[in-house]
Length: 508
Image (cartoon, rainbow, N blue to C red; front, side, top):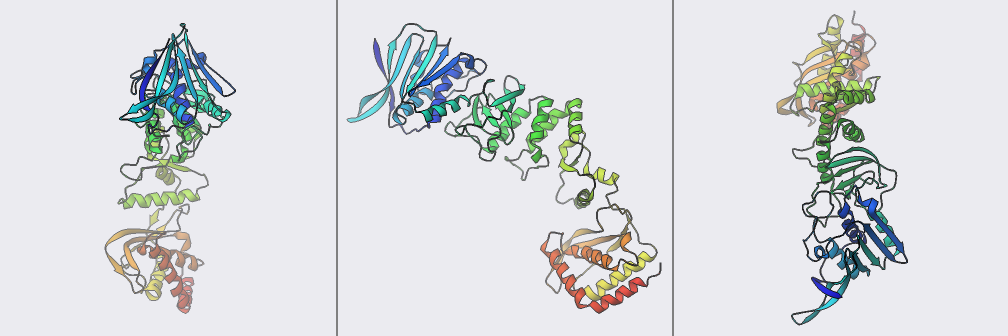
Protein backbone atom coordinates (compact mmCIF):
# COMPACT_ATOMS: atom_id res chain seq x y z
CA UNK A 1 0.00 0.00 0.00
CA UNK A 2 1.34 3.42 -0.98
CA UNK A 3 0.75 6.78 0.64
CA UNK A 4 1.65 10.29 -0.44
CA UNK A 5 3.28 12.77 1.94
CA UNK A 6 3.41 16.44 0.96
CA UNK A 7 6.62 18.23 1.88
CA UNK A 8 5.19 21.78 1.68
CA UNK A 9 8.04 22.81 -0.62
CA UNK A 10 7.03 24.50 -3.85
CA UNK A 11 9.01 23.76 -6.98
CA UNK A 12 9.40 27.51 -7.37
CA UNK A 13 11.34 27.67 -4.08
CA UNK A 14 14.32 29.94 -5.01
CA UNK A 15 17.23 27.64 -4.27
CA UNK A 16 19.57 26.42 -7.00
CA UNK A 17 22.18 23.74 -6.49
CA UNK A 18 24.70 22.54 -9.04
CA UNK A 19 24.87 18.88 -10.06
CA UNK A 20 27.96 18.59 -7.85
CA UNK A 21 26.16 19.95 -4.80
CA UNK A 22 23.09 17.78 -5.34
CA UNK A 23 25.17 14.62 -5.72
CA UNK A 24 27.35 15.54 -2.76
CA UNK A 25 24.32 15.82 -0.48
CA UNK A 26 22.94 12.50 -1.65
CA UNK A 27 26.28 10.79 -1.00
CA UNK A 28 26.58 12.57 2.32
CA UNK A 29 23.64 10.56 3.73
CA UNK A 30 25.52 7.31 3.07
CA UNK A 31 28.78 8.71 4.40
CA UNK A 32 27.23 9.93 7.64
CA UNK A 33 25.54 6.61 8.30
CA UNK A 34 28.95 4.95 8.75
CA UNK A 35 31.50 7.68 9.34
CA UNK A 36 34.88 8.30 7.76
CA UNK A 37 36.50 5.07 8.93
CA UNK A 38 33.91 2.53 7.74
CA UNK A 39 31.66 3.87 4.99
CA UNK A 40 33.91 2.99 2.04
CA UNK A 41 33.90 -0.65 3.14
CA UNK A 42 30.08 -0.91 3.03
CA UNK A 43 29.33 1.58 0.24
CA UNK A 44 29.04 0.57 -3.42
CA UNK A 45 27.67 2.09 -6.60
CA UNK A 46 26.88 1.15 -10.19
CA UNK A 47 26.14 3.18 -13.29
CA UNK A 48 24.56 1.97 -16.51
CA UNK A 49 22.51 3.63 -19.24
CA UNK A 50 21.75 6.78 -17.22
CA UNK A 51 20.91 4.92 -14.02
CA UNK A 52 23.08 5.57 -10.97
CA UNK A 53 22.56 3.23 -8.00
CA UNK A 54 24.16 3.86 -4.60
CA UNK A 55 23.97 1.20 -1.89
CA UNK A 56 25.04 0.96 1.73
CA UNK A 57 25.05 -2.39 3.53
CA UNK A 58 24.16 -2.93 7.18
CA UNK A 59 22.60 0.48 7.71
CA UNK A 60 18.97 1.67 7.76
CA UNK A 61 17.05 4.70 9.05
CA UNK A 62 13.50 6.08 9.25
CA UNK A 63 12.19 8.08 6.30
CA UNK A 64 10.67 10.53 8.82
CA UNK A 65 14.08 12.26 8.97
CA UNK A 66 13.58 13.16 5.29
CA UNK A 67 10.31 15.02 5.85
CA UNK A 68 11.22 18.25 7.65
CA UNK A 69 13.60 21.10 6.84
CA UNK A 70 16.01 21.37 9.77
CA UNK A 71 15.40 17.81 10.93
CA UNK A 72 18.56 15.70 10.94
CA UNK A 73 19.47 12.51 12.74
CA UNK A 74 23.07 13.83 12.69
CA UNK A 75 22.50 16.96 14.77
CA UNK A 76 24.94 16.95 17.68
CA UNK A 77 26.68 13.77 16.50
CA UNK A 78 30.41 13.63 16.03
CA UNK A 79 32.00 12.16 12.94
CA UNK A 80 29.37 13.27 10.42
CA UNK A 81 29.50 15.72 7.54
CA UNK A 82 25.89 16.88 7.50
CA UNK A 83 23.94 18.78 10.11
CA UNK A 84 21.74 21.35 8.36
CA UNK A 85 18.80 18.93 7.98
CA UNK A 86 17.89 20.11 4.49
CA UNK A 87 20.22 18.07 2.28
CA UNK A 88 17.98 15.33 0.92
CA UNK A 89 14.89 17.54 0.56
CA UNK A 90 16.57 20.37 -1.34
CA UNK A 91 18.80 17.96 -3.29
CA UNK A 92 15.68 16.08 -4.42
CA UNK A 93 13.95 19.33 -5.39
CA UNK A 94 16.88 20.49 -7.54
CA UNK A 95 17.41 16.99 -8.98
CA UNK A 96 13.84 16.82 -10.28
CA UNK A 97 13.26 20.45 -11.19
CA UNK A 98 16.66 21.52 -12.56
CA UNK A 99 18.37 18.29 -13.69
CA UNK A 100 15.37 16.16 -14.70
CA UNK A 101 16.44 13.17 -12.64
CA UNK A 102 14.13 10.62 -11.10
CA UNK A 103 14.84 9.98 -7.41
CA UNK A 104 13.92 6.85 -5.46
CA UNK A 105 15.18 5.44 -2.19
CA UNK A 106 14.58 2.42 0.03
CA UNK A 107 15.84 1.50 3.50
CA UNK A 108 14.78 -1.14 5.98
CA UNK A 109 11.07 -1.79 5.46
CA UNK A 110 10.15 1.25 3.32
CA UNK A 111 10.66 2.68 -0.15
CA UNK A 112 10.26 6.26 -1.29
CA UNK A 113 9.82 7.92 -4.68
CA UNK A 114 10.15 11.68 -5.04
CA UNK A 115 7.19 13.06 -7.01
CA UNK A 116 5.50 16.37 -7.73
CA UNK A 117 1.91 17.27 -6.90
CA UNK A 118 -0.56 20.03 -7.74
CA UNK A 119 -1.28 22.40 -4.87
CA UNK A 120 -3.98 25.08 -4.69
CA UNK A 121 -2.90 28.18 -2.76
CA UNK A 122 -5.34 31.06 -2.48
CA UNK A 123 -6.99 29.99 -5.67
CA UNK A 124 -3.70 29.65 -7.56
CA UNK A 125 -2.43 26.33 -8.91
CA UNK A 126 1.13 25.55 -7.86
CA UNK A 127 3.40 22.51 -7.98
CA UNK A 128 5.00 21.11 -4.89
CA UNK A 129 7.33 18.32 -3.85
CA UNK A 130 6.03 15.11 -2.28
CA UNK A 131 7.09 11.58 -1.38
CA UNK A 132 5.28 8.43 -2.38
CA UNK A 133 5.94 5.96 0.45
CA UNK A 134 5.43 2.18 0.32
CA UNK A 135 6.03 -0.62 2.79
CA UNK A 136 8.61 -3.20 1.73
CA UNK A 137 10.04 -6.45 2.93
CA UNK A 138 12.66 -5.74 5.59
CA UNK A 139 16.19 -5.28 4.19
CA UNK A 140 19.40 -4.58 6.08
CA UNK A 141 20.61 -1.77 3.89
CA UNK A 142 19.82 1.49 2.07
CA UNK A 143 19.65 2.10 -1.70
CA UNK A 144 19.32 5.35 -3.64
CA UNK A 145 18.51 5.30 -7.36
CA UNK A 146 18.91 8.29 -9.67
CA UNK A 147 17.67 7.99 -13.26
CA UNK A 148 18.47 10.34 -16.13
CA UNK A 149 22.10 10.86 -15.09
CA UNK A 150 24.33 11.61 -18.08
CA UNK A 151 27.89 10.32 -18.44
CA UNK A 152 29.25 13.82 -17.73
CA UNK A 153 27.14 13.96 -14.58
CA UNK A 154 28.41 10.53 -13.55
CA UNK A 155 31.97 11.89 -13.79
CA UNK A 156 30.89 14.65 -11.43
CA UNK A 157 29.63 11.92 -9.09
CA UNK A 158 33.06 10.27 -9.18
CA UNK A 159 34.55 13.61 -8.18
CA UNK A 160 32.01 13.89 -5.36
CA UNK A 161 33.27 10.61 -3.90
CA UNK A 162 36.69 12.27 -3.53
CA UNK A 163 35.20 15.28 -1.74
CA UNK A 164 34.78 13.37 1.54
CA UNK A 165 37.50 12.62 4.06
CA UNK A 166 38.30 8.92 4.45
CA UNK A 167 41.62 7.00 4.46
CA UNK A 168 40.89 5.29 1.12
CA UNK A 169 40.36 8.59 -0.69
CA UNK A 170 42.84 8.48 -3.62
CA UNK A 171 43.65 12.18 -3.12
CA UNK A 172 45.28 11.23 0.20
CA UNK A 173 48.67 9.54 0.37
CA UNK A 174 50.64 8.99 3.60
CA UNK A 175 49.13 9.69 7.01
CA UNK A 176 51.37 12.10 8.93
CA UNK A 177 49.16 12.80 11.94
CA UNK A 178 45.65 11.98 13.11
CA UNK A 179 43.64 12.29 16.31
CA UNK A 180 39.95 12.59 17.07
CA UNK A 181 39.70 16.15 15.78
CA UNK A 182 42.37 16.68 13.14
CA UNK A 183 44.44 14.92 10.51
CA UNK A 184 47.34 15.73 8.20
CA UNK A 185 48.17 13.61 5.15
CA UNK A 186 50.58 14.05 2.30
CA UNK A 187 48.82 14.78 -0.98
CA UNK A 188 48.81 12.21 -3.78
CA UNK A 189 49.71 13.21 -7.34
CA UNK A 190 46.15 12.60 -8.53
CA UNK A 191 44.76 15.86 -9.98
CA UNK A 192 42.08 17.60 -7.95
CA UNK A 193 38.66 17.04 -9.58
CA UNK A 194 37.61 20.36 -11.08
CA UNK A 195 34.31 20.35 -9.19
CA UNK A 196 35.89 20.38 -5.73
CA UNK A 197 36.02 23.76 -3.91
CA UNK A 198 39.21 25.75 -4.47
CA UNK A 199 40.49 28.67 -2.40
CA UNK A 200 41.26 31.18 -5.15
CA UNK A 201 44.53 32.48 -3.67
CA UNK A 202 46.02 29.01 -3.13
CA UNK A 203 45.46 26.95 -6.29
CA UNK A 204 45.01 23.18 -6.24
CA UNK A 205 48.15 21.77 -4.60
CA UNK A 206 46.64 20.74 -1.26
CA UNK A 207 43.17 20.18 0.18
CA UNK A 208 41.32 21.44 3.25
CA UNK A 209 38.63 19.21 4.75
CA UNK A 210 36.29 20.75 7.30
CA UNK A 211 33.72 18.53 9.00
CA UNK A 212 34.83 15.70 6.69
CA UNK A 213 34.07 17.59 3.45
CA UNK A 214 36.47 19.27 1.02
CA UNK A 215 35.94 23.01 1.53
CA UNK A 216 39.05 24.65 0.10
CA UNK A 217 42.73 24.32 -0.69
CA UNK A 218 46.18 25.16 0.72
CA UNK A 219 49.26 26.34 -1.23
CA UNK A 220 51.32 23.22 -0.50
CA UNK A 221 50.91 19.48 -1.26
CA UNK A 222 49.30 18.39 1.99
CA UNK A 223 45.80 17.38 3.00
CA UNK A 224 44.63 18.96 6.25
CA UNK A 225 41.40 18.12 8.03
CA UNK A 226 39.66 19.63 11.05
CA UNK A 227 36.62 17.55 11.84
CA UNK A 228 34.77 19.88 14.22
CA UNK A 229 34.86 22.84 11.85
CA UNK A 230 31.42 24.44 11.79
CA UNK A 231 30.45 26.15 8.53
CA UNK A 232 27.73 28.68 9.30
CA UNK A 233 27.14 29.75 5.71
CA UNK A 234 25.94 26.73 3.72
CA UNK A 235 25.73 28.69 0.48
CA UNK A 236 29.41 29.59 0.37
CA UNK A 237 31.09 27.32 -2.16
CA UNK A 238 34.64 27.40 -0.81
CA UNK A 239 36.71 28.75 2.07
CA UNK A 240 38.42 32.13 1.80
CA UNK A 241 42.15 32.36 2.42
CA UNK A 242 41.66 33.71 5.94
CA UNK A 243 39.28 30.83 6.71
CA UNK A 244 41.98 28.37 5.66
CA UNK A 245 44.63 30.15 7.75
CA UNK A 246 42.37 30.15 10.81
CA UNK A 247 41.62 26.46 10.39
CA UNK A 248 45.31 25.71 9.84
CA UNK A 249 46.19 27.52 13.06
CA UNK A 250 43.82 25.28 15.02
CA UNK A 251 45.46 22.21 13.48
CA UNK A 252 48.96 23.56 14.10
CA UNK A 253 48.16 23.95 17.80
CA UNK A 254 47.60 20.18 18.23
CA UNK A 255 49.86 18.27 15.83
CA UNK A 256 53.10 16.62 16.99
CA UNK A 257 56.60 17.99 16.41
CA UNK A 258 57.54 15.81 13.38
CA UNK A 259 54.34 16.79 11.55
CA UNK A 260 54.77 20.45 12.50
CA UNK A 261 58.23 20.34 10.94
CA UNK A 262 56.84 18.99 7.67
CA UNK A 263 54.15 21.67 7.53
CA UNK A 264 56.65 24.40 8.43
CA UNK A 265 58.95 23.35 5.60
CA UNK A 266 56.05 23.61 3.16
CA UNK A 267 55.49 27.18 4.38
CA UNK A 268 59.10 28.26 3.85
CA UNK A 269 58.10 31.12 1.50
CA UNK A 270 56.50 32.79 4.53
CA UNK A 271 59.29 32.19 7.04
CA UNK A 272 60.15 35.87 7.17
CA UNK A 273 56.55 37.11 7.06
CA UNK A 274 55.23 39.50 9.67
CA UNK A 275 51.72 40.95 10.03
CA UNK A 276 51.38 44.09 7.91
CA UNK A 277 48.90 45.67 10.32
CA UNK A 278 47.57 45.23 13.86
CA UNK A 279 44.93 42.75 12.70
CA UNK A 280 46.16 40.85 9.64
CA UNK A 281 43.92 37.90 8.80
CA UNK A 282 45.79 37.06 5.61
CA UNK A 283 49.22 36.31 7.08
CA UNK A 284 50.69 32.86 7.82
CA UNK A 285 52.80 34.44 10.58
CA UNK A 286 50.74 33.12 13.51
CA UNK A 287 50.53 29.62 12.01
CA UNK A 288 54.32 29.59 11.63
CA UNK A 289 54.74 30.78 15.24
CA UNK A 290 52.57 27.91 16.46
CA UNK A 291 54.40 25.36 14.30
CA UNK A 292 57.73 26.58 15.69
CA UNK A 293 56.46 26.18 19.25
CA UNK A 294 55.37 22.61 18.52
CA UNK A 295 58.78 21.76 17.03
CA UNK A 296 60.66 23.48 19.87
CA UNK A 297 59.03 21.10 22.33
CA UNK A 298 61.24 18.33 20.87
CA UNK A 299 65.02 18.75 21.06
CA UNK A 300 65.41 15.92 18.56
CA UNK A 301 63.13 17.45 15.91
CA UNK A 302 64.63 20.91 16.49
CA UNK A 303 68.08 19.44 15.83
CA UNK A 304 66.78 17.74 12.68
CA UNK A 305 65.45 21.08 11.45
CA UNK A 306 68.78 22.84 12.08
CA UNK A 307 70.64 20.07 10.26
CA UNK A 308 68.34 20.38 7.24
CA UNK A 309 68.55 24.18 7.17
CA UNK A 310 72.03 25.20 8.41
CA UNK A 311 72.02 28.52 6.54
CA UNK A 312 69.19 30.28 8.39
CA UNK A 313 69.58 33.42 10.48
CA UNK A 314 66.77 35.01 12.43
CA UNK A 315 66.08 38.72 12.55
CA UNK A 316 63.86 40.24 15.24
CA UNK A 317 61.14 42.60 14.08
CA UNK A 318 62.33 46.19 14.57
CA UNK A 319 60.31 49.20 15.61
CA UNK A 320 60.25 52.02 13.07
CA UNK A 321 61.57 54.58 15.55
CA UNK A 322 64.53 52.49 16.76
CA UNK A 323 67.24 54.24 14.72
CA UNK A 324 70.21 52.48 16.32
CA UNK A 325 68.88 48.95 15.74
CA UNK A 326 67.66 49.86 12.26
CA UNK A 327 71.14 51.07 11.29
CA UNK A 328 72.63 47.88 12.73
CA UNK A 329 70.15 45.79 10.70
CA UNK A 330 71.06 47.65 7.49
CA UNK A 331 74.75 47.02 8.13
CA UNK A 332 74.08 43.33 8.79
CA UNK A 333 72.05 42.96 5.58
CA UNK A 334 74.77 44.72 3.62
CA UNK A 335 77.29 42.23 5.00
CA UNK A 336 74.89 39.42 4.11
CA UNK A 337 74.95 40.41 0.43
CA UNK A 338 78.73 40.21 0.32
CA UNK A 339 79.18 37.11 2.46
CA UNK A 340 80.69 34.08 0.72
CA UNK A 341 78.29 31.84 2.60
CA UNK A 342 74.70 32.46 1.55
CA UNK A 343 72.17 32.83 4.34
CA UNK A 344 68.39 33.21 4.48
CA UNK A 345 66.84 35.55 7.04
CA UNK A 346 63.73 34.31 8.85
CA UNK A 347 61.41 35.76 11.49
CA UNK A 348 62.49 36.10 15.10
CA UNK A 349 60.56 33.12 16.49
CA UNK A 350 62.99 30.74 14.79
CA UNK A 351 65.38 31.45 17.67
CA UNK A 352 63.28 28.90 19.62
CA UNK A 353 64.70 26.24 17.29
CA UNK A 354 68.28 27.30 17.98
CA UNK A 355 68.69 29.32 14.78
CA UNK A 356 71.44 31.98 15.23
CA UNK A 357 70.79 35.72 15.06
CA UNK A 358 71.68 37.72 11.94
CA UNK A 359 73.44 40.51 13.82
CA UNK A 360 75.38 38.09 16.04
CA UNK A 361 76.77 36.15 13.07
CA UNK A 362 77.56 39.39 11.26
CA UNK A 363 79.52 40.61 14.26
CA UNK A 364 81.39 37.30 14.64
CA UNK A 365 82.34 37.51 10.96
CA UNK A 366 83.59 41.08 11.27
CA UNK A 367 80.76 42.38 9.11
CA UNK A 368 80.04 45.42 11.27
CA UNK A 369 82.17 48.49 10.82
CA UNK A 370 84.81 49.04 13.49
CA UNK A 371 85.03 52.79 13.59
CA UNK A 372 88.11 54.63 14.81
CA UNK A 373 89.30 58.23 14.90
CA UNK A 374 91.48 59.44 11.99
CA UNK A 375 95.19 59.38 12.70
CA UNK A 376 98.33 60.54 10.91
CA UNK A 377 97.83 61.56 7.29
CA UNK A 378 94.22 60.31 7.41
CA UNK A 379 93.44 63.63 9.11
CA UNK A 380 94.95 65.50 6.15
CA UNK A 381 92.88 63.52 3.65
CA UNK A 382 89.69 64.20 5.64
CA UNK A 383 90.48 67.94 5.68
CA UNK A 384 90.89 67.95 1.87
CA UNK A 385 87.48 66.31 1.46
CA UNK A 386 85.89 68.83 3.82
CA UNK A 387 87.49 71.74 1.94
CA UNK A 388 86.20 70.39 -1.38
CA UNK A 389 82.69 70.10 0.04
CA UNK A 390 82.84 73.66 1.33
CA UNK A 391 84.25 75.25 -1.86
CA UNK A 392 82.54 73.26 -4.61
CA UNK A 393 79.35 71.95 -2.97
CA UNK A 394 78.74 74.47 -0.20
CA UNK A 395 75.46 75.62 -1.74
CA UNK A 396 74.18 72.02 -1.82
CA UNK A 397 75.15 70.74 1.63
CA UNK A 398 74.08 72.64 4.75
CA UNK A 399 74.56 72.10 8.47
CA UNK A 400 77.27 69.44 8.47
CA UNK A 401 80.14 71.37 10.05
CA UNK A 402 79.77 69.52 13.37
CA UNK A 403 79.67 66.08 11.73
CA UNK A 404 82.22 63.68 13.25
CA UNK A 405 84.55 61.84 10.86
CA UNK A 406 85.62 58.24 11.50
CA UNK A 407 87.72 55.54 9.87
CA UNK A 408 86.46 51.97 9.22
CA UNK A 409 89.34 49.72 10.26
CA UNK A 410 88.01 46.25 9.31
CA UNK A 411 88.29 45.70 5.57
CA UNK A 412 85.77 42.81 5.64
CA UNK A 413 82.97 45.22 6.57
CA UNK A 414 80.34 45.36 3.82
CA UNK A 415 80.23 49.12 3.37
CA UNK A 416 83.00 51.35 2.02
CA UNK A 417 81.40 54.28 3.81
CA UNK A 418 78.69 54.86 6.37
CA UNK A 419 76.58 57.81 7.45
CA UNK A 420 74.94 57.90 10.88
CA UNK A 421 71.92 60.17 10.74
CA UNK A 422 69.27 61.57 13.05
CA UNK A 423 65.91 63.06 12.07
CA UNK A 424 65.97 66.86 12.20
CA UNK A 425 63.39 68.62 14.33
CA UNK A 426 62.94 71.21 11.57
CA UNK A 427 63.59 70.70 7.87
CA UNK A 428 66.10 72.91 6.01
CA UNK A 429 65.81 73.71 2.30
CA UNK A 430 68.84 74.57 0.10
CA UNK A 431 68.92 76.83 -2.95
CA UNK A 432 68.11 73.88 -5.21
CA UNK A 433 64.84 73.30 -3.37
CA UNK A 434 66.06 70.05 -1.80
CA UNK A 435 64.80 69.39 1.74
CA UNK A 436 67.41 68.38 4.30
CA UNK A 437 65.55 65.94 6.54
CA UNK A 438 68.41 64.36 8.53
CA UNK A 439 71.31 65.63 10.59
CA UNK A 440 74.62 63.92 9.90
CA UNK A 441 76.02 62.69 13.21
CA UNK A 442 79.07 60.99 11.69
CA UNK A 443 80.61 59.89 8.39
CA UNK A 444 82.92 56.88 8.21
CA UNK A 445 85.25 55.81 5.37
CA UNK A 446 87.31 52.65 5.04
CA UNK A 447 90.97 53.34 5.73
CA UNK A 448 92.08 51.78 2.41
CA UNK A 449 90.43 54.68 0.56
CA UNK A 450 92.55 57.26 2.40
CA UNK A 451 95.81 56.74 0.52
CA UNK A 452 97.80 58.50 -2.17
CA UNK A 453 96.16 56.72 -5.15
CA UNK A 454 92.53 56.64 -4.04
CA UNK A 455 91.42 60.26 -4.58
CA UNK A 456 88.50 59.50 -6.93
CA UNK A 457 87.16 56.66 -4.76
CA UNK A 458 87.41 58.74 -1.57
CA UNK A 459 85.60 61.71 -3.18
CA UNK A 460 82.84 59.42 -4.49
CA UNK A 461 82.32 57.73 -1.10
CA UNK A 462 82.48 60.95 0.92
CA UNK A 463 79.96 62.89 -1.17
CA UNK A 464 77.70 59.83 -1.33
CA UNK A 465 77.56 59.75 2.47
CA UNK A 466 77.06 63.52 2.70
CA UNK A 467 74.04 63.18 0.42
CA UNK A 468 72.29 61.08 3.05
CA UNK A 469 71.23 64.28 4.77
CA UNK A 470 68.51 64.30 2.06
CA UNK A 471 67.27 60.75 2.76
CA UNK A 472 68.03 57.06 2.34
CA UNK A 473 69.49 55.31 -0.70
CA UNK A 474 66.08 54.76 -2.31
CA UNK A 475 64.73 58.28 -1.68
CA UNK A 476 64.17 60.87 -4.40
CA UNK A 477 65.97 63.57 -2.38
CA UNK A 478 69.11 61.44 -2.12
CA UNK A 479 69.02 60.63 -5.85
CA UNK A 480 68.61 64.28 -6.82
CA UNK A 481 71.46 65.30 -4.51
CA UNK A 482 73.85 62.87 -6.23
CA UNK A 483 72.82 64.33 -9.59
CA UNK A 484 73.72 67.85 -8.39
CA UNK A 485 77.01 66.54 -6.95
CA UNK A 486 78.01 65.15 -10.36
CA UNK A 487 76.99 68.35 -12.12
CA UNK A 488 78.96 70.59 -9.74
CA UNK A 489 82.10 68.42 -9.84
CA UNK A 490 82.10 68.51 -13.64
CA UNK A 491 81.48 72.25 -13.62
CA UNK A 492 84.42 72.84 -11.25
CA UNK A 493 86.85 70.41 -12.86
CA UNK A 494 89.83 72.79 -12.43
CA UNK A 495 89.22 73.07 -8.71
CA UNK A 496 88.93 69.29 -8.54
CA UNK A 497 92.32 68.98 -10.26
CA UNK A 498 93.85 71.29 -7.65
CA UNK A 499 92.48 69.17 -4.82
CA UNK A 500 93.75 65.99 -6.51
CA UNK A 501 97.26 67.52 -6.52
CA UNK A 502 96.98 68.45 -2.83
CA UNK A 503 95.83 64.86 -2.13
CA UNK A 504 98.79 63.34 -3.91
CA UNK A 505 101.20 65.70 -2.13
CA UNK A 506 100.13 64.55 1.35
CA UNK A 507 103.20 63.11 3.01
CA UNK A 508 102.63 59.96 5.06
